[in-house]
Length: 216
Image (tube, rainbow, N blue to C red; front, side):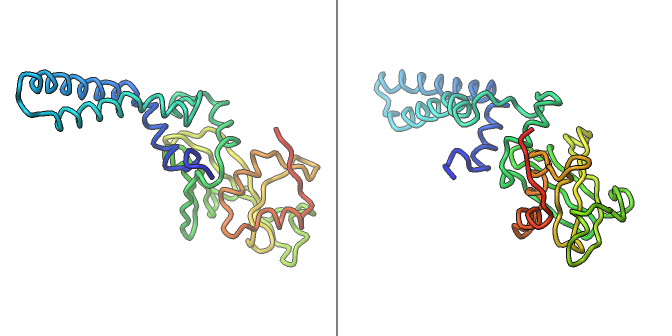
């Protein structure tokens, strides 16, 4: 993974893109201070080191929006994205870009670049989609118990979309739901399952279950 694909770097770049106007104003203020200090230095007051530092800060802040655009080209701030763009973001972000938190009865995954964007699932009655899920691909494991859950995709607490994932083999793996009557899984659902996996079990269990992915 290159440095520009590092989640903290991408998160910083996204923040700069959202605050580009303020960043440029700060850079302009540093430039103005450097200019004043430079004039004073020319008049005979020894301020060269201080003027240099402020001119350097000005250069950094004025260039940050361009650097952020290079790291995330054509990437809108998440809060400005449309419904379709927010869904497409699931396809574009690597599972490592999400931070997953587990409790005894729930799990959440939030995007490191903007924690307001997150998935949430619950293991109580509210979160259960089907308590006794019956499909051959899901029940054909040493432990035939399977249960499906809702996974809500939210931004700032507002529901964007709901997905279904299925716990199989006595909750040893969580798999994406294939299209009805098939074993074909949309890549988007597969990526959600990969976000929540704990021990790299998704690919292994998908192979055991006879599931395969396709691009949407």
